[in-house]
Structures are given as C-alpha cells and as structure tokens.
Image (tube, rainbow, N blue to C red; front, side, top):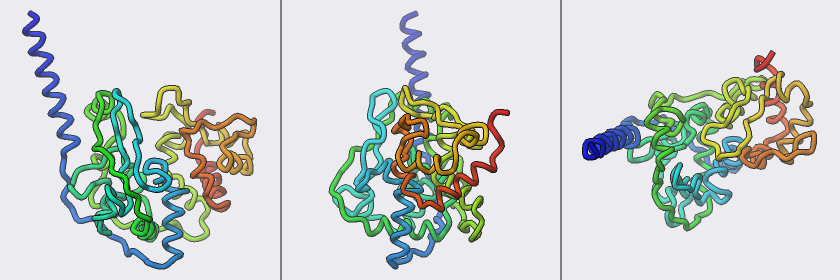
Amino acid sequence: MAGAAALCLLLAALAFRAALDRHVDRRYAFAPVVPAVPADGAAVARGRHLAVAIAACVACHGDDFGGRAVVDNAVFGHIYAPNLTRGAGGVGRSFTAADWARAIRDGVGPDGRGLVVMPSDEYEHLSDADLGALIAFLQRLPPVSHALPPTRLGPLAAGLIVLGRARMIAAETMRHPVPATGAPAPGDTVALGRYLATVGGCAGCHGPGLAGQRVPGAPPGTPAASDLTRSGIGASWTEAQFAGALRTGVRPDGTPINPFMPWKYAGQMSDGEIAAIWAYARTLPPAHR
C-alpha cells in the first residue's frame, strides 16, 4: 500500500511538473510591432516619466533600474526583475528596439518565452508614441553592474500558474503581436484618466471597475485595495484629498497608506494626470449601492 501511494504521489508530481513546463516553456514566435524610437530630450524625459510615475517600472526593477528581487521566499518563489541597464548583468547590453517592444507590450523575452510577473496585459495599451519614448529612455539608462540569479518558482507560484488562479504569465492570455495603439484624444480628460489607470495597472490591485478587492499575490497582511468609485473614497474624499494622498502616502484622516501601494511613484504624476484619474474614477459605477 505504501509503495502504491508513493507511486501515485510520484506520478502526480511528474504530471504537475509537466503542466508547469507547458506554461513556463511555451514559446511565442512572432515579429513585434516596433514603434519609432525618438532621440530628442523631450521624448526621453517623457519616457522617464512613464517609467517612474505612470507604468512604475521602478517598483519592480529598482530606482536605478538595476534589477532586484520582487518576491524572495521559499513558498512563493525567488522572482527577480532583471537589470534593465547596459551594465554587467543587464539586458540593455543586448536588447534591440524589437526586444524592448516584445518584452514590454507583449510580455515575451528574446528567447520567445513568456515573462513571469511582467504586467504586459497593462502595458499593451501603451500608445506607440509612449512606447517609443519609454524605449528611448531605457536605452539611455546609466549602466549598473548587477547580475541577478534566474527566477525560481516556489510551490505556491507554480500552483497558481498551473491552476490559472493568478496573472503570472501575461503573454498566455494576450494576442501576439499586440497591435499599434493610439493615444487618448487631446482634451478628453476622462479618456486620459482611463489610459493612465490602465497603463498604470490600477485595476491589477483595485480590481475590475476599481471597486476594491484583496490584492492577488500580495504578501500576507496586506490590506484590501480601496474602492475608488463613488461608493468608496469617491464618496468621501475630494479631488484635492485624493491628490494629497498620492503625493504624501497619508489619507485625509491621517492614517498611512500601506507601502504595497506604490504611492511614492504615482505621486510623481502631474496635477493634470492625477485630476484625469480622479475624473475617470468618478464615471465608474459605484461598487456598492
């Protein structure tokens, strides 16, 4: 009996490993849509603003873009955001504009594999102009010498991938190549807010419709993301209080915002961008009536 049970466990483990490999080792063969990459200072400055304040690349890749551990524990795994620079150990040493476009907007690395925990299902909405500006900025990063070990998935992350219970490999659910995308119409504040909230990944934490939820994959003890609609903070905060919370990390009642919320990056958006997100959130249906 013990031998039969051990054999069953072994077969189950092999089946699980095979299922995981089908996800992790799947190859995507396509030519990405590569935007024009400008070289002027204004475009590079726009790319930096996108990388820091809007798309918040620094939240995973580090303030110097030299890469860091995003998750580092035996249960979930050891997941590393790579060094993006041209320094030793950095992908910027070899990446072409096509490699950047494929990684950012399609979530696929140069080897054709889907990137783990790369939020390309948000970045696929970047306009061609913004993607080009972002690539221009990344190509000009000061080199940082920082080699990182390969990502190793723990049992929890592996289980989430196999069971399809978390957005771990965005490329699996996307069409490739992601087509070119236009920018919001000038002067349309709500459209700009929708664009910023989408590219900035607000729904990834705050849930569909920004109605608030427990954040998938958040560390234990992380509070639920707030309801941003008119049944949540939109009912009790003013636009100025919303902007103040993003700028300072402190709610109107004086309580601190949990650091899992990347407010120190989002707070670097312009006044107009924050106002646009507020205007967009005000158009969403209340989560609770």
